[in-house]
Length: 152
Image (cartoon, rainbow, N blue to C red; front, side, top):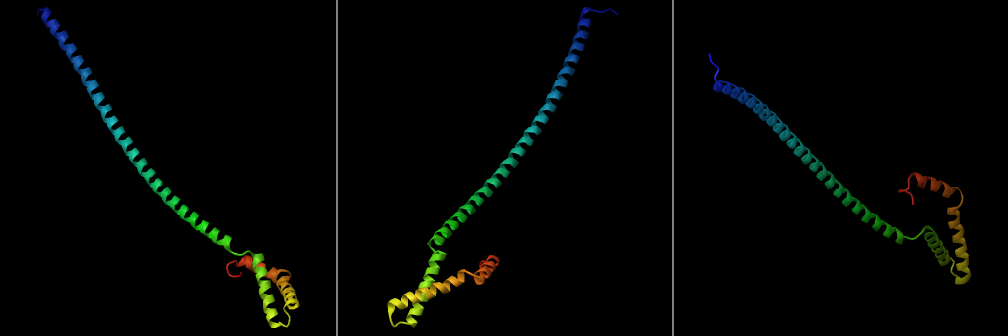
């Protein structure tokens, strides 16, 4: 058998072509696997982004609701503050009670207005003073601390 130069070249060409095809096939399969992995990664990242957006949307809605509730509470507290600032103080109420008691005594003893008024005013101050000093106010303050909404 004679080896002709054409057959050597054909054999070399066939071997080179086979090696090239194997390498090409390897890179094709490798790139296809990488492509699949990247698609999976992109899909996973999209899902994570969607989940995060849903969580942020829920938390934003919850925060808006909380802000609305706090604004409503703030308005209610402002109205309560305005109402409380218009109420008479304890000292004013005591002074009014003194005057009312004096007027009641004066109407009962009305021969002369001037001395009777002074006498009635002093008597009513003493009576009201008894409510602020001594055992009765002490007990009332203790009970008021325990049941503040029931006793005024």
